[in-house]
Amino acid sequence: MKKTLVFENTYFSLFVFFLYDENWKNYDYLLWGNRFDHDFVKHLSTYVNVLEQSYQSIPRLITKSSHSLSKYYSDKVKLRRIINKYDACIGNVREINDPFTSVDRVQIDDGTGTHLELVNGPKKKSSFFAFFSFREGVKISRTSKFILTKQFESHSDYRKKCEFINIRDEWNKKTESDKKELLNIFGVSYEDFSYINNSSSILFTQPLSENRSDYSELDKINGYKHLINMHGIKEKDIIIKPHPAEKTDYSHYFPNATIIKSNFPAELIALLDVKLDKVLSVTTTAGECFKGNCNLVYYAKGADFFNFPESVANRLNSMDL
Image (cartoon, rainbow, N blue to C red; front, side, top):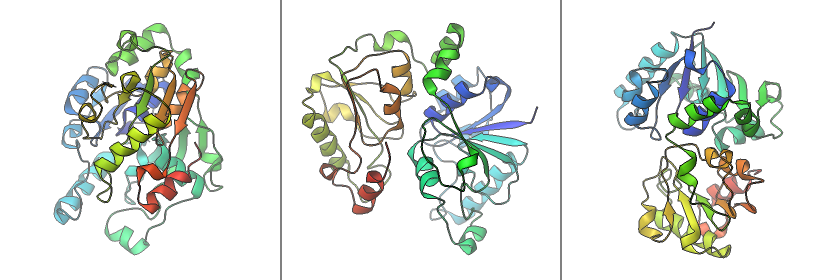
């Protein structure tokens, strides 16, 4: 068996990987980024071998070059040394982004970012800039396979590399013991959602203001309030699942809503056969799983009432959801 590293930064793609590969316990794991926390790293370590470097890679894998150029290069070299110890790397491998690694790469679906690049073709950077910053001119160019959870027509450069899986089908193949283990990993149980009924609706939020300095939290909140109101949903009937990378305190803005924890894959709610009235979001990939479990899945995309910068609105509106 190839020596394999699982390289992950989202609960969603980690869950997809567990569904996809029945040998998931046999690999090493490097968790990174601002969606995981140290408690989850410690918890996952009771199931698999999680590299100690994960603790240093949360909340940020690579220091921004604008903050410290020397630390940026040091972090890139440290990551390269780890990656090059393995024959294969699977997970959010587009973020390895280093031309000096030779490891075989398999990308697990990480949501709309990868989807856009696969549909529209590669985002190219200056080869001069890329070389001297230890980055790749095209981030997904060296990926040998893409494991995706939604069917779409990809760019001709990547079409033969795409493999599509159905999350619900893969979940249903699991034994009850396997399902219980996966639920335990993410700290979720059937009872957690027993209060949800057909009159409940859920809003999946995203780190829209956290990811951009030119977009405010107030615009984000006003957008979500408009989205809820336009569907005639009472605040007491809305359930809000924040994104793990968000800092917004939704209980402050929606005091009568139910705010649930952020640190688990939203798809588990649907897979536990929870029935809802409406599922609302801007673009979240979680909505796909709820089709058949609710009356409406609605994507706002770049709607005017969110007051997005024009470039953001255009990108969101171009998505095929």
